[in-house]
Length: 445
Length: 70
Image 1 (cartoon, each protein chain N blue to C red):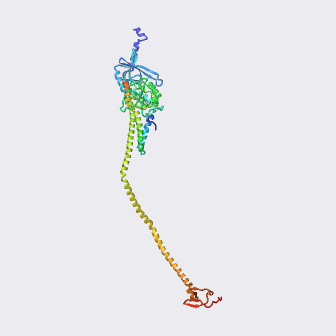
Image 2 (cartoon, helix red, strand yellow):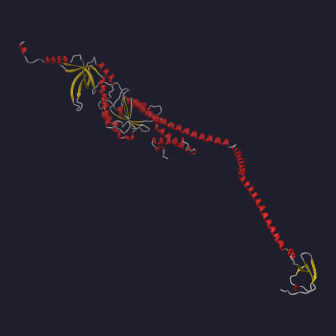
Image 3 (tube, rainbow over the protein chains, first blue to last red):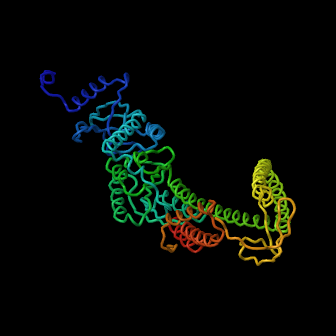
């Protein structure tokens, strides 16, 4: 006993059991202990799930804490189902999780965290936070809307598909695309890439670079993958991949996973669709719109031709209907016009002649009075002349005592021209004398 | 007038729309109607040909799809 009591060491088992008791006492079932960590090295064995929980420094990425953790087989199915229901994805390495743990110390196996519950909303929130960070960085860099602002070429037919050839999603896409009822033409070139796991971003970026080098050969890029039960979309929530897609020179269509899944690419791609099938539908829709536009133009052209010809026909019909009656109508119109002209001519003449007539009347009056005056004047003058003539007449001279002597009817003015014995006839103012010429006497004066 | 084969799809559709607008306007000359219609039909046929695949093309593509499905 003394020996036992005085010894200054204990057995390893004693030490380990003491540690076990200390840990158990420090972490009783109540209150619960929740811990936040990143999953690493998740693996299953014998129905149990083993993993490492790690914490990395935000800025350096170096591991600052690490612990072994286990989900025992009795808890594993429920826990897995909870996580899938809440996050839409499997409980796998690389995820940030919030788990309820019971720390336990086993004398043989050492420290282990027994996981008894998981909070899926934390993982969702974490993923959202990471996405927001990426989106905000792209926004700061001014590239977030670049791809979204691209327009799809007309028509969009030559499609570069980034997917894995074996993926169900690619088959769905191709089937949908080429079994379209309108037989719309598409050319698809597959660029194979990993679409899940840690290599996703790097692999897709590599293929994007390839396509960018052959930009002229394609109208758009389709990044597609099917959902599947074990969706692992975290590979798409990558800054470099997002930056590549945002700045890609061709419009990018992203159809990753199922209805409820979103990744950061959904916010920056030119077009986001839920599934690969929906991506094909979108392409068919655009081409169908083109086809419908063509049909509409064709219809419009037909209508225009019909209208124009119809219009011309109607015009001809009208003309041929009017033609027989047109000459008669024209004559009637001309006739009426002549009548009208005549009528107005009469009125105009009357109007014009009236003043002229009255002017003539006035002139006639004036003429009358002028004539009378002139006549009277002339008569007076004539009277004057008559008096003068009277005064100058031989009768008046004779009355004053003169006489006219004639021989053989001729008045004689020279006595020497008369031979003696000649009979003279002398005319006096009253009566006449017949005498015989005796002798001439010279003029005394 | 550019040969339809040498035109891009967008060029062809743009010309189609111009012809349509012209034909719908009052300026449409009935003497040019058949010329317009001929050109438009040519453009329409080419655009349609580019948008849709022929039977044989379709069969070929679908047979390739069959290989993917397997």
